[in-house]
Length: 517
Image (cartoon, rainbow, N blue to C red; front, side, top):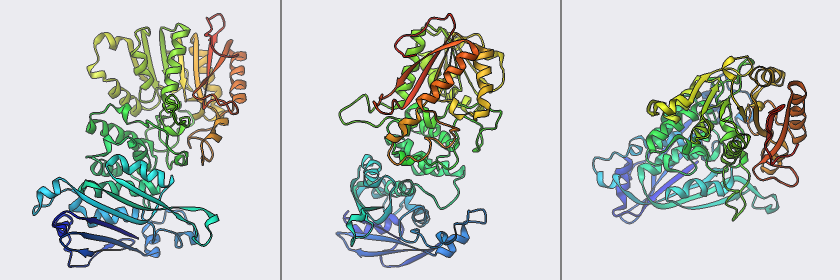
């Protein structure tokens, strides 16, 4: 695989000083999976080009993966890794140009500190999301992007395009920033890494993205893909980016729709248990940030339709808040509050005199406390708020005594055999006057191109509208509630809305209007 970087800064041969690689030499750097070579195809005063060529040995690559790696037989040895730019090239780039990535150049400090004209070419780059994804990730960084899909076979154009693109980037960018952007975005575009994603990847991401990632409009997509969609790691990265970029953490959540092809996380971790495993059977599910805030759960935007471009998580939260106000609720508990977005929105409306949030995850509650700035909250505001740890499948007297309870994107994380316990705890023991429940509408999934399976791998199920109504009817029969339903998001005439919402009212309570029974 090959990467070239060219500049026309005068004298162009100063590129060798910036990269700490002499233009007159061919240098080799051993990797665990092959050899990286650096050489200069051209080097004169007007234009200088450096090439990084990575020669991958498939057998060494397989041996370097460890005994725990699944055996895919021939696929381990015959694949695109030796030819297509990927995390292998990113790791080699980080090793070969380590000093240049730090921005240090004692011989040309002024040149290293400022932008220079650059042209970067990657002849073959796996790109999940196609050329559009390359434009989406690089253009906000100041690059002029030329991304051309590589056909499967030029002799058979009817076969269409492959998943690879030829990428050329042109712009005036600081060289250290350009190298760090490549280091992060090559595996992001490939949507894959050749090594296990551990906690130290957060540090690598923050270091490489220090000067540009916090301001990127797709920082959430980048963070999730780079970290293999391990939500525990992504959540830490979001918090650290917030501190780095003067943004509140909510701004670092997915703000726009991500290609539903991104719905293949490796080890999901939302607000449920702190490690990267799935929730224990007796743990209550916390709200899934991959659903309440993740863009792949947002309705597809239509050109010129500003409302459709609003993230589904925003529409959902507003729908819940509006419903609670219509119900006349003054005290509200958010069951499975996650990082506290809904709790914060409730505190922002003076009509709610008491707000509580509970979650099974201590880490999620700590993040909620940070988001809500508990340490700087006024005493009056603090008296309105209660945060505590709890499991929704076990009776807890702290759940009781509220006008309304909210289960926003929670029930789908509960194993079906445990649903009955959650129902008993919420509708039987806590028994608030009203319960607001939102959950994905499985029928709407066909509107997400390339989505396979459910919207998040931790979902135990996703209900159709009929299944959701049948479950709600069972609740009403068992616990003496009645229910109305509302759509959230674009209410498609064929498949319904992306999110479905049920408003439960205890028998004798005032019912909210605007829904259907």
